[in-house]
Image (cartoon, rainbow, N blue to C red):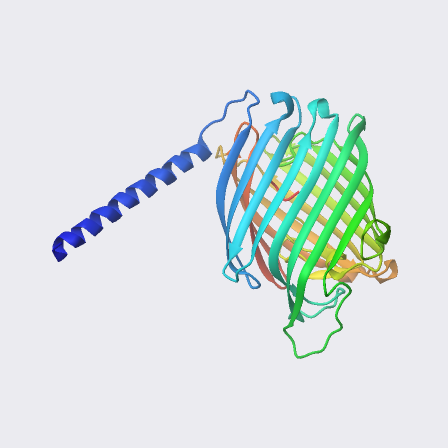
Length: 374
């Protein structure tokens, strides 16, 4: 084929490929922005994600969300399945599965999450005065499975059993500092199983975007060699949230979180601060110790008065890890805050996707998820 014809052929092929790609993205965008029916039918969405962090480099992900009502009845509480898989330029990968499912007339509640990932995480040590520069990069395989099985006791009060299985294997501490440091408990990996009880008060109708409501969880877990756990310790979780509509399109949301670990827990099962939900701006586990106490408040405009789908939020948080109650100091709380954009992805179900920008004394953080942080 002559060079001129080859160039024309390549050009036309690229144009055709571009037109197909544009058609695909056009149809995809239409699927996101079209109006839904309000007959209680389920909704499903798949969307790509892109993120960057020092310990992962660029991360490419794919998320999906499935929403439904028990028996197809919108009078029931909205249930969800959320899946996320990712791969990074540092050859890390993982699969996350989360769910919140409610039975007909809210008789049963199933809350849980599954995590499997190969990752490096920065280890700064244990305590609230750890150095800003990490002591080590921990490379490991991690499996987590948490599940609540709850039954309605009366009204919005539920109680039931709680299980937590966590396995850390192929753990390798790669030193990032010239300073020596003691290896923490569980540095070589471990398998731990916690069994316990949980009580939940939950009158929220839409857990991904609460307009008005209350949520309180009190959970106790016992990790014992008797049922196969390598470490012997207990964990108590207190999570209390309340939401109030200040106007027809504005919500004030608040959360108080406490986790209290007693005994010899491995380093990855201590109380960890940071992440995409509480103390946004700090990566998950930047600070760790026996106990955690944190609070956050967020003001949401959903949507703007001049827009049907776009909104925003403003948030602040304060948190601290500490070994014993006498070590809890008011001036040792870490602060975080920021703002975010919102886009109404499922109008009939009142579900937004969020892009949050958070700032801390150690730098910024970016988060892209469907559903509010808490």
